Length: 147
Image 1 (cartoon, rainbow, N blue to C red):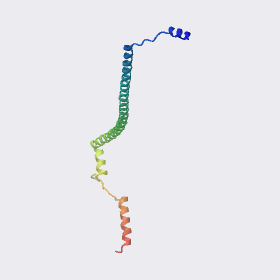
Image 2: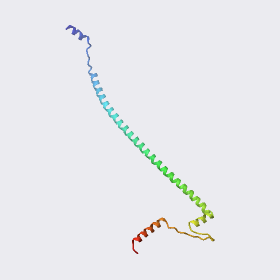
Image 3: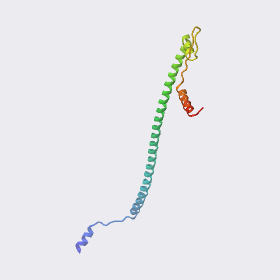
């Protein structure tokens, strides 16, 4: 037993410092509080960043759809402009034809059915296809009815 006593004497005694123990408890509580507040803070920042990503994505999609819409409008306006330019060229040609006497004569002969002083105008009417169809229907109905 003596050997046990001597072994115990050699070990240093543990000194308990009450102030240090209280400070350690307080710091542990502060660490727990700060870790929960840090967790809340990081969660809040994560939610804000997710909202920003959603906003950026929605804006990108809307911008792409606007680009497509604008390109379609540009194509439509270009076609309209080309048609208007072709019509303008045709009208300019018509103005040139109207300014010439020969152009006026051609219009008078073809559209107004006019002739010159020494000319005789002969008009031969040919029935149009619509009139032919109506005449055929009348003939068929006429055959059915007894007049």
